[in-house]
Length: 383
Image (cartoon, rainbow, N blue to C red; front, side):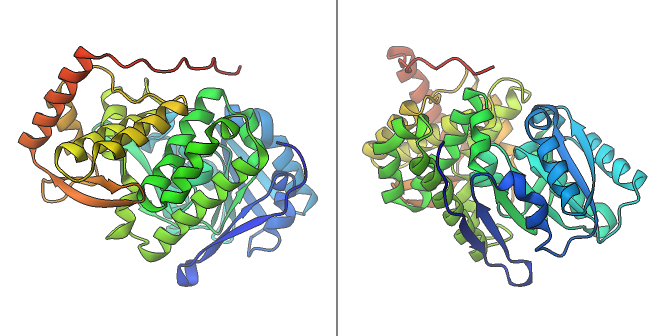
């Protein structure tokens, strides 16, 4: 990504909890001056992981120091398996050891795992301290850093323990995406595709037409992808902060996706890959239940494949998948609810019946055996 770009701002309107998402290449080097515009105490706690720290921790701490702040950093192991209550205790112990106060501010410098952990710890430390999201992955920039959902995984399911705690600001530097391994960069596109399916058919069409430029980090295309995704997320969150209604549409692809992650012990598929599979499979399930046409399924599958993402699940039994879906946080009164597309840009929330889901699963498995899918070759990951 080259050239100077103006800062883009997206507002998340939540009354006295409102905040802004600032999107600008190079904002990482100005963190200190940006924080001075917010009501922040002098002491700043940074939570990051080893991979991100190698690229950005020195830049951030220097910027904070130059602005007169007193930063302290905690570096965690990377990966979804770090997202546990034990890690939250480790974070809290660090803040207690450094005598952080309610006026202290904590920064989540990293991807979705770091953001979820830091936000959850911030929500319970001293009954709530301010935190700022500095997302460095595409998944975090377009999705997990916005909306105030924080939490950790449980062996029985993903994100089963958590709290709503809105950040004071979200600061996005798109140039950080260039240091992502290719697999992580592509995985983030799943959440981007999701926004087109649930809320904006024009955006989905843009993605279909521009996916090659996006994959090549074209400045304008990537900037539009991040900004439009944040706009959709902000609009939905502003309307339904606590996921009691419309916000549930953001879970498209996640009912099956989260189940696949849990079944794999959070070792195999990365989050975006699981969501990509979930979107295609949930669209096919919607077709079998009469909610959408085959064309909708084909377009979603086509864009997922063009992005280099998987569209078929690993080998799993229906019983295992259904049981994993039963442990999802979207289950209500014992009923599994799934977000299903009606057309591109329009989805609805549907209860799932076991027999109907099993019928779809068996038919889908039979089709897969008869006509194995030929996925495009995946690029090798960057070092």
